[in-house]
Length: 78
Image (cartoon, rainbow, N blue to C red; front, side):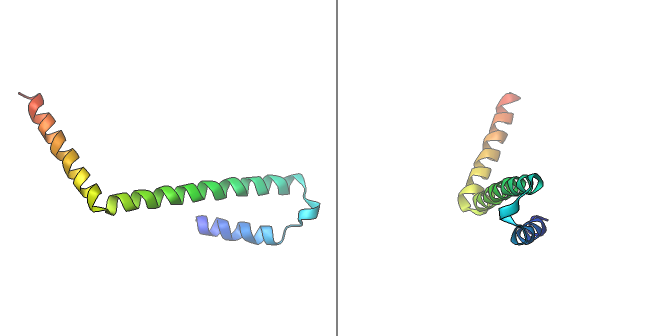
């Protein structure tokens, strides 16, 4: 969906008259800028988490966390 929004946004920017911008055009430009920044942040967070979960260190951390939780539960019932 983001690709479609980006394509439509770029198409509208390509056909926009920047020398004769009305209030609606300015609002559109600001909203598109905010959307672009938020999409870039979303993509960055997605790939950072993806790389963390694919790494061997992440698998080791998950194992250690589950092992520690099992030990903690065992000590709690004693």
